[in-house]
Image (tube, rainbow, N blue to C red; front, side, top):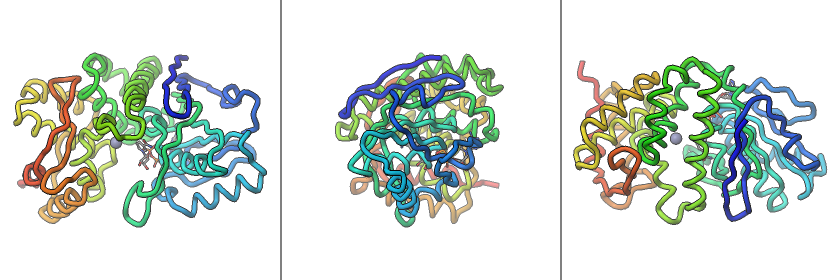
Length: 342
Ligand SMILES: NC(=O)c1ccc[n+]([C@@H]2O[C@H](COP(=O)([O-])OP(=O)(O)OC[C@H]3O[C@@H](n4cnc5c(N)ncnc54)[C@H](O)[C@@H]3O)[C@@H](O)[C@H]2O)c1
Ligand SMILES: [Zn+2]
């Protein structure tokens, strides 16, 4: 078992990575109520069970959670323990941050993506209409318990998709971690527990270090986490790829733009693509003309767009980054490159 702490406006969050972790051990005797992701295969007596996945991120779920908390007489001295994938954690974070203006919150991520990304950093949200995460809060949990035992139950594709975010951390923030991932790719693919514990610990720590210096995304630093996500988001829904798979393609495409600008060498870009491929992730996609047109429309609506340019974090070599203004035209050309030729 390993742990670290990160600091923020509400104090400090304790992040624990290990196996067989028990939330009761991290509650300091306080009363806890549980919200559980039905897909995670965990049974907790008296818990509110939610169906997992993106559909759960709506106002109806918030209403359900508020009703559950109020029926049980939950007060500010109690804690909500949320067990599940990123979607359940996002909506539970929103509920805990707003119920009575904030109650205790402990997160137990059950997918690898939630362990290294969604559970870290205090962003809670629900979707509104077609727009993801439109309504939300920043509300940091007191503890995040990453139990790598949950990784065993994940379908292969879902398991591998999470590696995209880990590779992202290596490429833009930590060259040493990139090398470590290269050396341990095979161990990670066979779900070796030692390698997994190390990967989750290092990945979560890297994300936490960014959150510590730009908790509310106002200093132009937390944006680094969007590497691969401009193109990734544009192709995610239309291509049927999982989020991590779309981000892997996004990193390859955005990496090409970085290489063209001389920020990254051809050799560096090849190393990134090789690692993604070894981890079972795509580095290209085959889109129809209609899909390319749809992806271009989505870039036009991107939150990061300012006039004719998109502000995009780009790798500088391996392990460093810079925020670059990329013209919408350039992103569109890059998307053209994903059109099927056959
Ligand atoms: N708050 C943040 O900073 C942040 C960061 C990244 C992603 N997210 C959000 O996280 C969500 C994606 O999270 P996700 O990738 O964990 O997917 P998810 O929460 O949608 O879960 C995917 C599926 O896996 C099931 N599941 C959960 N645990 C399982 C387990 N141990 N074994 C088998 N199945 C399991 C769920 O029931 C669901 O059907 C998105 O809504 C995204 O916006 C948030
Ligand atoms: Zn992502």
